[in-house]
Amino acid sequence: MEDFKVQSMLLTGGDRGIGLGLALKEMSHRKSKGCTLVVLQLDVTDPESIKAAAQKVEEKVGGSGLNLLINNAAIACNTTLETEDAQNMAAVYATNTIGPLLMCQAALNMLTRCLALRYGLCGILSVSLHPGGVKTDLGVEQEELSLASSAKGMVEVLSRLSARDNGTFLDWKGQAVPW
Ligand SMILES: NC(=O)c1ccc[n+]([C@@H]2O[C@H](COP(=O)([O-])OP(=O)(O)OC[C@H]3O[C@@H](n4cnc5c(N)ncnc54)[C@H](OP(=O)(O)O)[C@@H]3O)[C@@H](O)[C@H]2O)c1
Image (cartoon, rainbow, N blue to C red):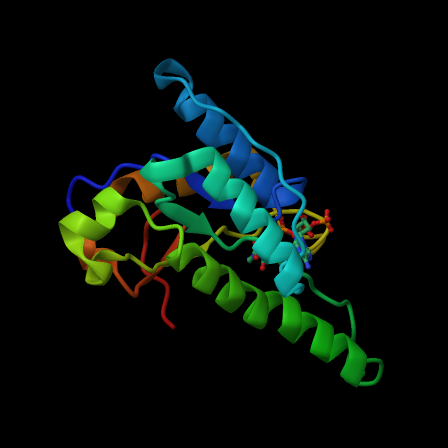
C-alpha cells in the first residue's frame, strides 16, 4: 500500500471545527488536480441517515468507489462527576463509539474496487489521528494549536500513510501517541 492515494474521501462532521478545517485543507491540497466537494446531511447515530448518505455517496463515486473514511464527528459534554448523567454518557457513546462503527460498516460496502482488487480486504488501513489541542466548540478553552496547523499536519500525515502505519495512533505531526 506504499502508493496509496486519496481519490474519494468521506469525512463526517465537516460543517465546523476540525472537520471543516480538514475539508478546506484537503480541497486546497488537491486544487491543482481538480476535485469536487459534495455536502451531505448525516447523523452518525441514525442508521437510516447513514444508509441514505451511503446511497448518495455511491451515486457520486460510482464504480471508482470510496477510499478514505474520516470518522471526525464527535460530541463532548462539559460535565463533572456531580453533573454527569446516564443520558449524556449514552449520547457520547452513541456518537463517538457506535457512530464510527456504523460508518465503517457502511464504508466497507463502498470500498473502491481497485483497492479491493489490488490489496484485498486486508489492504484496508485503519489509523487513529490525534488533531492536537485545538480551540473548537469541543476543544477546551486553553488549547493553542490553530485549526489551520492541525488540518495541514493531518492532511500531510494522511498523504504519507503506508501499510506499516496500520493500527497505529498518530498525532497531527505524524508522531506515535501511546495507546
Ligand atoms: N478540539 C480538540 O482539541 C480535539 C482534541 C482531541 C480530539 N479531537 C477530536 O477531533 C474531532 C473533531 O472535534 P472538533 O473539536 O472539531 O469538535 P466540534 O467543533 O464540536 O465539531 C464536531 C463536529 O461533529 C459533528 N457531529 C456531532 N454529532 C454528530 C452526529 N450525531 N452526526 C454527525 N455529525 C455530528 C458536528 O456537527 P453539527 O455542527 O451538526 O453539530 C460538528 O461538525 C472529534 O472526533 C474530537 O474528538 C478534538
